[in-house]
Amino acid sequence: MTNRTVSSPPKSFCSRVLGIAGWLLGLAFGRWAGVSFLIPAGLSVAAYYILKRFMSGARAVAILPAAIQFGQLGWICLGLLAPGGFAQVWMDILVLGGLLLWFCVKPIFAPAIALLAYQTISLAVNIYTATVTTNSLQAISVHILFRLTAIGLIIYFLAQRARQRDASVQNDSATA
Image (tube, rainbow, N blue to C red):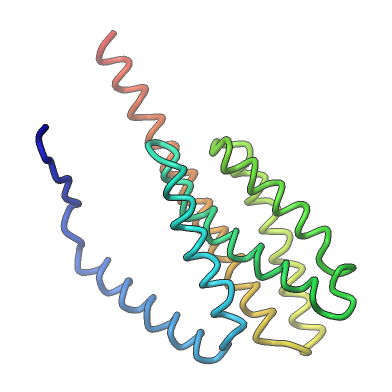
């Protein structure tokens, strides 16, 4: 048995700068939002490691978008504990939970587009809510941040799947 290590290509300067900027912005946002940010972030990390055990190969590209959204789903579930919380979050839990399960079982185009549409609509609702009410600006800001992150990661997922498909088509045509 040979021990082969797969090394990733070296990161570009721009990639490193963006990574550092992301860490600094995340740290600043986390400091401002406090526990409102820490809970879904921690849930996302836990979901990432759980999903990593069950999703591999071509499906691995779905781990990060799913993990972020599972962290967000856990955060929304905590809304059930708030007075009147059930009436506010039950639909979000059912729809997001169902779409996420579909996405994890079949990480393909259709569930990704459905999640993208759902997160985009929910983002608009959250932004509207943030402009109308200011009861918990940190909490709604965390929802907005997680929805934006989910949208970006779903778009990244779709781009990666398109690259995988194109590479597969090229390999098929080369062998034919």
